[in-house]
Length: 254
Image 1: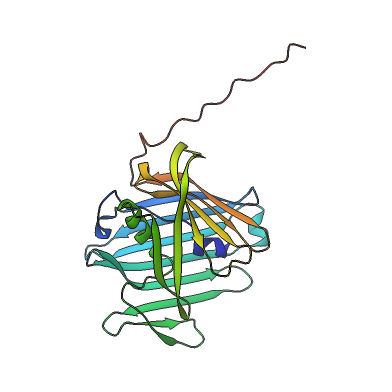
Image 2: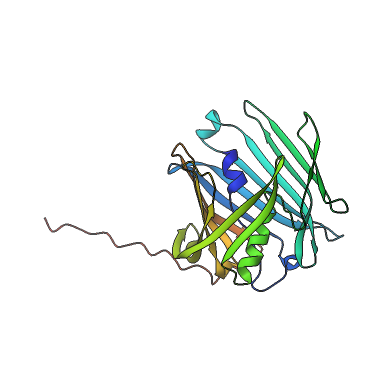
């Protein structure tokens, strides 16, 4: 479940607006493992009185899966807009409740272009480049870039103890069915230099300011995680979805 969180789900950016104008919102996604209901993902973007933005993501197993994997995975990024781009301040990852807890915090020092990393074992410092992002907040930058009609995306990410490049391409447009109705979405894929069978695909809806409404992640062992939007506050959905029309029952004449 924790692997899903690190990959899962890009968020909102209004069409043709700068990063500092991304609205506050909350979204809830149903998570499935190999087609079976496995848990939920909650995401929330908020702003305090000083203009500090907080992006929070929580994933938890539900139902029978909670007996086998009771982990609660939470990620939190704080950031501000700098030159119309997102500049992270802190990132915190915590996994609790399972057999092995995990903690990782990143503190960005932009005067020295460094990030200070603490895993509760041995803190260290990583040199970073301008426009470096963390594993959570980069998803907001992707949404901003989609709103600017870009078609290829590349981000430098402070991922653990090293800098990584996340490359994402647009594939096509598809109509996706969600619990809220049907909606047109842009299908994107994240490329990996050493995939080993791993693959991540996202569907982002222009009618919802490029909010991701579905994610599909395949692990190297073949397990498939999916997350589909089922509730949204902060974005008007009144005209975004087509109703799902059930087919009338077919009765046999025999």
